[in-house]
Image 1 (cartoon, rainbow, N blue to C red):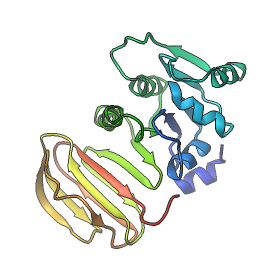
Image 2 (cartoon, rainbow, N blue to C red; image 1 turned 120 degrees about the vertical axis):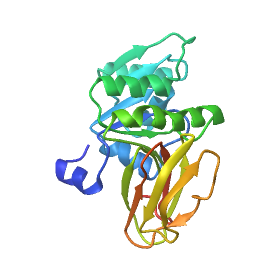
Image 3 (cartoon, one colour; image 1 turned 60 degrees about the vertical axis):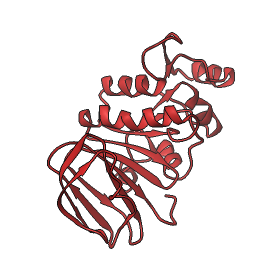
Length: 226
């Protein structure tokens, strides 16, 4: 945990959902260590145990959480919200949904990018489903942050950082980019187009605006991991 001053300085998400796809490192690990509340999507708890972190809750079907982690978390008072293995939604979806019901408003997913490709893509689409309900939602992976923007997104970075945008909805209308090497001014982007890939920060800020639809925004901190 960190004090409020440090949290404001790093702009760390208050809630973190730990998925089981890949071991958190860089931005993801930093967010876990600074979070106010951690929720495990089942096997994500195995990584927490390695770093001496205790979740508020474990949510999922319990099939990938180690017995060692299960026993340690029970001893420390972690809540277990267990679902049957034959369920409609992924463990990550259920964990995010649980956090939102507990009044989470600033949330990050970590451990969401590795492992099975279908789970990785499902986690990306979780942004589309839940980001409109929150003040901020982001997937953190090593030196990369992934957002779903519904209209306006301002990002702090550094010259040389990479920024890619893609439509998550059939069309994202009137997209305008500022602070980047390749600006846009009121252009419609359509699902499946890749003209927004590999843009570059010119300064320490980028601004992404559009009038309709959803944009997937991927910010890679070039040469930096925190």
